[in-house]
Length: 416
Image (tube, rainbow, N blue to C red; front, side):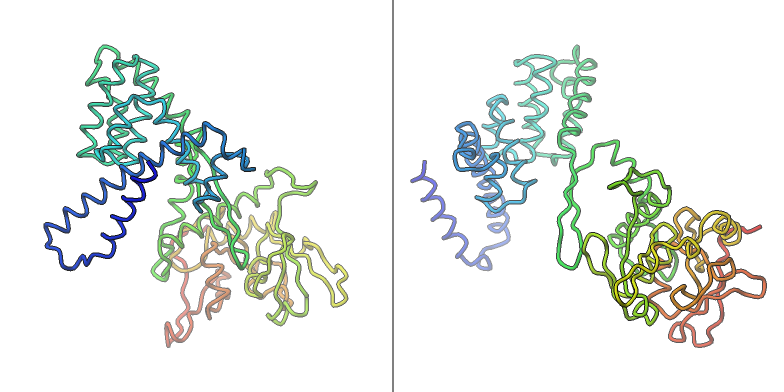
């Protein structure tokens, strides 16, 4: 086997060096089809090797905790890719021979093979091996026309084609099996990056996915004509808004004996001059703008130290716009007060018009409701926030946006 793989590697290397520009369009398409087919056939060989290594316990013998961990290190894969490789190798090992044959011949892709193997396992459990073999034949035929997502969807009703008399009972079994797979595969990975950033990846089951979409989708819509964020940035900010709302509920489990909260440590004089950076209690550093913005939020408690490091204040309640004061603010603003924004009060933080670090009081005439996006926007841009003659918020745009600097108001929310 090794000799054949070495020869194949040499042949592939020769193809890589060949000038693709010299091929006709017909030959380019043929080359694409052939390389794809070879890729699947090599995957079949690799999966057979992975399954054998897993069965022999090679990973444990070499000091790894699992084959997944060993593959991640050996092949420099991320953990989710290594997990999928081990899982598919195990699935093909117990699947009808037709699945492995289809992958080895290049008739199906790796992801299609995964779908066929999963469906065959479900059919075997509900209708037996003989019916599963028929199902594999039908699915492999469909694989020439349909991508893995459509193939999986069609596979849920495969018995309508191969065993109609068992279809209804098998459909229920297939649904249960899919739920079990979703429960098994659910995970969220949080990876730390430089600068305190986090990378999120994972797979949600259907229920969690529905919950996430229900809260993220409405918040991911553009917040108005001034919203220049891309879709990914809007989803990021929506997730942050959901976290802020969860903190404000006061219903999260305690962490180390304290309520769930964010503690920002900063130098008071530096913060007042808008120059002081801050540190979270988990060791991450924040910019002065971020510190001042977080200090506005009624659910985030600032811990302010004096010059000698003594604690001057940990979340002084008189700074925080809560209770009756917040209720009055909600009645007045009705939601995010920035012009054109439709965010409701529950997604908004209370912003001090004159920052508390600058001596601004915590009072109704020094506060305004702002959603997460516009809270950042006001802190970073040159907008001026003030109360009009009727004691409702108005926003003066920067001169570069409106040379006349005509004050603007939010007319979306109905106010009493």
